[in-house]
Amino acid sequence: FDLNHTIDEHIVSIKCYYDEGVIQGLVIKTNIRTSALMGYNLAPKSSTPTPPNKFSKVYITSGNEGIEEIKFYNVENGETKEVFLHGVKGKNLISTLVISNPPDECLVSVESWYNSYDVSQGIKFKTEKSGSDFFGYKFSEDVGKPFSLQVKDKKIIGVQKFHDSNLISPGTYFVLSRSSSPNKVEAIGGKGGETFDDGAFDHVRKVFVAKGDSGIAYVKFEYEKDGRRVTQEHGQKTSQETEVFEVGQDDDITSVKAYYEKLDASKTETITYLAFKTLKGVNSQPFGKTPVIVNEQTKLSLLEGGKITGFHGSSTDVLHSIGAYISTSPPTMLHGKWIQVRT
Image 1 (cartoon, rainbow, N blue to C red):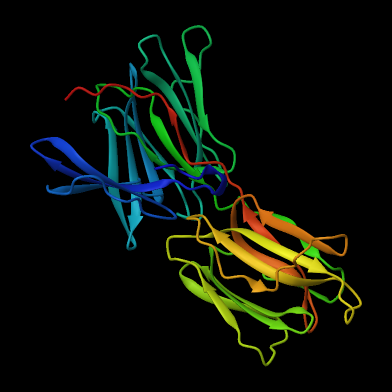
Image 2 (image 1 turned 180 degrees about the horizontal axis):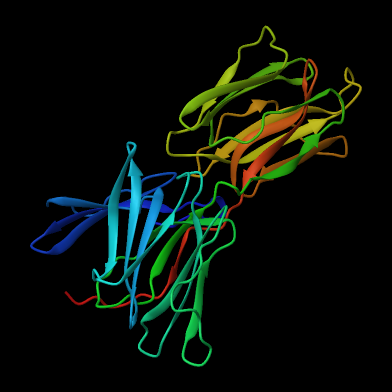
């Protein structure tokens, strides 16, 4: 089961089937699709989700030997709840970091330093809008080693859980930050007509296409944003039937093939053929007529390179050009130091 890192595909949960303490089967779910069962399912099951991403408060306790305890709180249904306890509860100074508007404001980096025993001596947090002072002792080059957990355009959604008498270097989960925007890929085709720009969404769910005498006459796209459907249409409907390509709920369009040429009845080049392909390898039906010979007058272009989240282009009573918003985010990754936990 391979992840497609070019479109920021990442694992969101793992379902395990086990018997007598032995894993019998796995089902992996990503933000885009779900794997087939690997192994057997003749056993009880459990599920391991990814950490939440609504940190609202962080409590830090420091003592003579460094950072003793960190507690993370989430906002769930309007209530603040403790979700993570790291280290062992101390009796010393307690400091508080308040994240004012989760999940819109979130943690983006953690800085710390630790001594020769790998015990954290000081820790500092930064959100998208502000930063904290060092909790514990300030960094000393003579006795400490610094480290930083930060990835460009990503936010922190969880911290590896562990217990010890003091805080050991944490591992931290990162996911793509909302501030990252997809690439707007230049439109292919002719230069005529009125431009349109649908913008970027979470998914493209349906594509509607109608042909005309001079190529593709009409397109309509159904997008999804935050669970809501939005449609945008361009060109002009004809008497010919409008065909539909529907994308699976756990799938996304990753490629568009287009032929365009300057026809006798047109003053500028026109899109004459469209075809779509998804992450799972599903091909749409061909929209329009595929040229038998591709020559100087007939050109083939591809829109690809990641998850397509929106379209732009130009049209009159036909479709002259089409471009796309393509998400090419790096994969979700885990940074930090893994430690062995003894309970």
